[in-house]
Amino acid sequence: MNERRWWNGSWSRLTRRDVYVRNAADGRWQVELRRGGPEGRVRGRTFGSEREAVEWIESAVITSEPNWREVPSRIDSRQRRNVAPRLPRAS
Image (cartoon, rainbow, N blue to C red; front, side):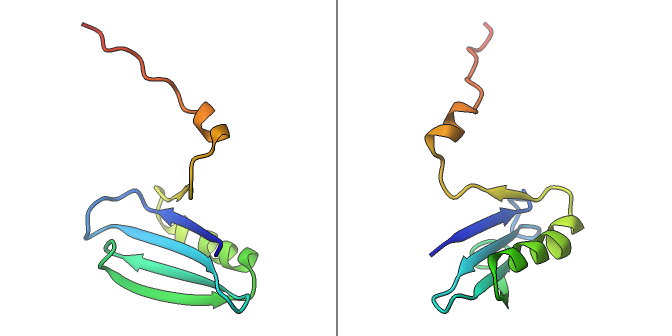
């Protein structure tokens, strides 16, 4: 199953929002809107393609708040190379 995820950057249960896009077994794409973390309220929508689903998320969800970011599904070697090295603490 293909999946993409966005998060509004909030750790608080009261303000946290997550959005998932998943490829369903029947070829449709499901968008899951989650409010309040893992045990929060869930709403869903279905789209005919991933492109339609992502366009809807970008226009209806992500533009409403400034801190939304896509969460990478996994870190591969190319992404690891782009991470800045930790600098030693000054004493």
